[in-house]
Length: 397
Image (tube, rainbow, N blue to C red; front, side, top):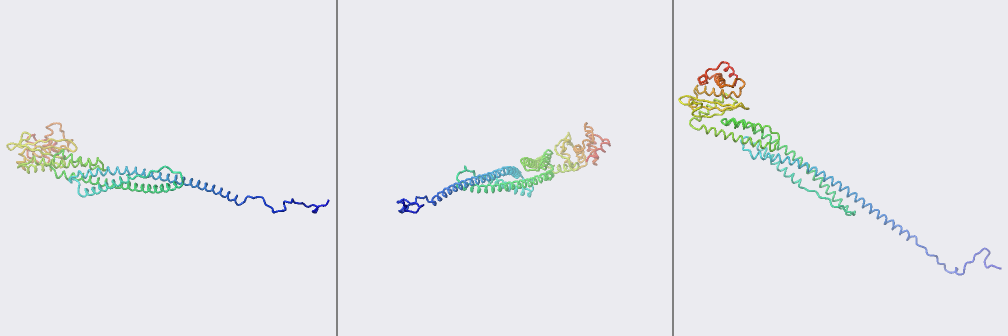
């Protein structure tokens, strides 16, 4: 059997002889695009997630930093409150001192310096109050989305800067309060010490003031001289000193008024003489027509009461006749005898004061030791004292 084709050939079907249509193929390009799109979506999500995480971390850090600044400002505010409280206490006390200053003891320069310091203290305290009234913003609820977080983080950073600036201002105010309080204290203490020192001059200028009023002035001045801080206690001490100073003036006026009349000038001369015999002893004088039963018909009377206090003091009563016969040897001798009683407040341990006889011998011996030989020195009334009394009295000056 013959074959139309050479041996080993292959015959194709008849229908294969026409145009050949290849099977459909999915385009590779379209598959690549889908894959890339998926990857892009994943990357976008990852980016957004990263941004979210970063924005949250940024917000948390900013909020923590802001809260630290707020806490620091609050701590400084508490410090300032304490300092301005101390400043106000000092300034108010100093102002009270100025309000009660009569000008009797405080000199003009001390008053002016304290006035400037008080004004500065009031200004600084007011400025501190304004600073303490400043409030810092509260943080809102934390947002979620990054675009909100970024905005809020920026706001937190701005608030932190404000808080830091506020804390610095509070610290400056605190430093100013401390420095100003120191100035007020120094000015106040200097003024009060000056006032205390002036008390002795006031006493010397009002020598006729009553003993107890003089002692009150000395005590008040001593209290003020111990001042180291300006507070209510210091103001009270100064007010007491001012009151004592006012009383000294009024006391002397009252005493001089009691001595008014034709003998006033001579009475004051007698008192000055008596004080010259016993320097440092507080003496007060009363005058009457009769003293100790004497004062008429050329007679003279005297009587002395003394107190062993610290300081000791005495009241000497003299009859008007002592002034009428002044400055006779008799008048001077009698006055010397009475001063001999008064000065015993300085020499209590130099003689026996347990009996009236010993007391009178001492006063008589003292007058003799001072050179007053007229019998009105006590010899006429009490007899001549033993030499031992005169010698002992000579050591009392």
